[in-house]
Length: 309
Image 1 (tube, rainbow, N blue to C red):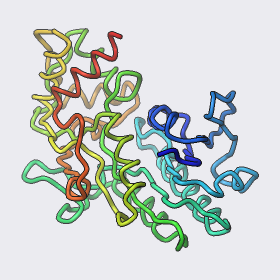
Image 2: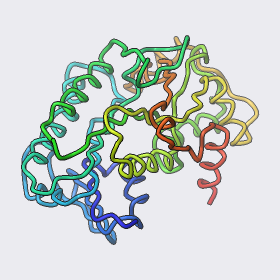
Image 3: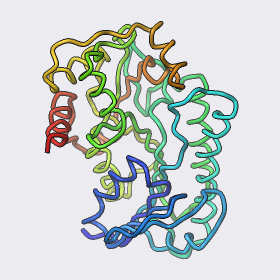
Image 4: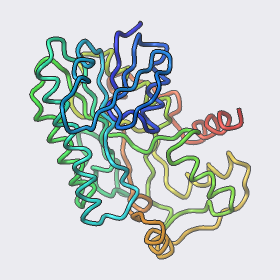
């Protein structure tokens, strides 16, 4: 099936690039809304916006099959007051703007996916968290997700179906978490982090893209969906799988106290590593979606093969 138009708001980052490449052969036109201008690449066109004010870009959303909102400042930073404000504003303001724009269109998008975060669930080592029985956590990162999703679902878009896609760590060769983890492994630092007992919820980049099309093709689906592999894995085993795939025998562990010092030095938060994210994609699998890369070993071997090629 050839789609008419796919819109990627804030789509100039890693996940946006994955989605643009995935839909390149599936859509007549892909439009990326970005703060940075970029030359057209075949049927991929970039329009400049600031994520806060209306402009001519609104006309391009008209008649779209799918709008995916990827806007948001990277959370890989210290949670200073200024960064907290920027993290929230960079998510809430574009979401509000897109909702207002959609409400004015004669032919609004069939589906609006807001890519939020699976970190909204509590630290969980006792049982998995899904859309139906999962418990929302506490803390700044959870507050961000709450405000983000509240803004999204409050947007008055009666003719546009909406899905909040709570995405886990996306794994791929080009960017994101994997190249950084692989570098740690290559330098002999790829052991467990903290206790190693915290769960890692992850998803292969191809499955992340595929699930957006699945949601588009199934008009009965809406609301909150988790976008994670059906087989989360403990950090200790996850790092061991990366070492095995990379043919590295040993990896020094990083205790929690060392991670706390390192986080201050490089300007990040240990929560990104030490929080146990045990999240399952129950609604996706219940709807019939199947993952091409359900387990970490298969996914990592595929990604490393891509890296070598």
